[in-house]
Image (cartoon, rainbow, N blue to C red):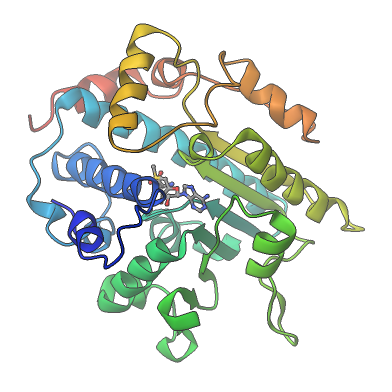
Length: 319
Ligand SMILES: C[S@@+](CC[C@H](N)C(=O)[O-])C[C@H]1O[C@@H](n2cnc3c(N)ncnc32)[C@H](O)[C@@H]1O
């Protein structure tokens, strides 16, 4: 059970919030992750405090879903770790921007791990309703808040929608709004003495984990291009990397069932249709100014990045 539907049922107006269903996909994501944590597929003490009220009582997901969550999580973690190691080898601090971050706990896992000193800024963006809930969850949790550093440097502003701390920043933004308004505003100066939250001079990784599908390709192209242009202005030639975890090719019978199920929940996936094949995903990044781009299917990641023994072990844990 999530607290979302109760909240929406309480709305005064008859206006149906068409974005509410999109925001609620975060509840699915974090609940699936918690299921994988509880069943021993993933070690992550930070997901529990980020769960919506009551979600801890939901039944665990079936083993196949937990394995999928594990492969997704390991795949992305391993790429993020490679990025952090590269930065460390070059003796540079780096920045990470997670778009549509929802209740993701990656910042806390990095901040308590071996690469904690490599990240100078970790910025999360999502709809203001989701950032407000997350800021409240962080503020209530000793584990989450304690990781952000000296409490006097943790500020919740913007009517509870925004949280700033020395490294971690949680900022509301609707990514469909033209980026020169949404992103430029999100990354504006906190304090002119400190410079912008997002430095144009540090290697930066942008993360899109299950978010582009909810946006029109024109809107998400605008977001990707904004980052390419922002870092192209740096005289030092800043490296920009990106990790995308996304659906593609939903025109088979399985995909059609999934699309219909989502439609019944008021969720459309305008970002999926133009990308029917695995090759079409990196192509868009190359067209938008990235110099190199590769894509792998979940099956590829399962096979090549996660050892058979590990998969076997995970598939047999705690049913
Ligand atoms: C499926 S959830 C994924 C959350 C997180 N990235 C993860 O993988 O656990 C999708 C998230 O993208 C956010 N999102 C979708 N469209 C967005 C938009 N136009 N602007 C900001 N956030 C958006 C949703 O609110 C939700 O939190």
